[in-house]
Amino acid sequence: MSTYQQYWPILLAALGALIFAAGAIVVSFLLTRRHPNPAKQEPYECGIPPLSPARVQISVKFYLMA
Image (cartoon, rainbow, N blue to C red; front, side, top):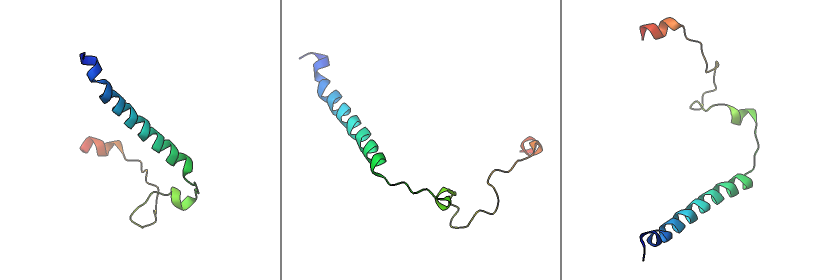
């Protein structure tokens, strides 16, 4: 038995695992229900509603001191 013939079972098992994983991801994507609404689109902040936008402009002086 040549060296390459010994690797065929490993290659087939890896290929089967890859196909199974990709198939599971595709099937779950196709079967999920999507109900987007504004509450679901907000970032989760420990149950506290956000009071201001998350992106705040910081002065360059802060980076110079840090």
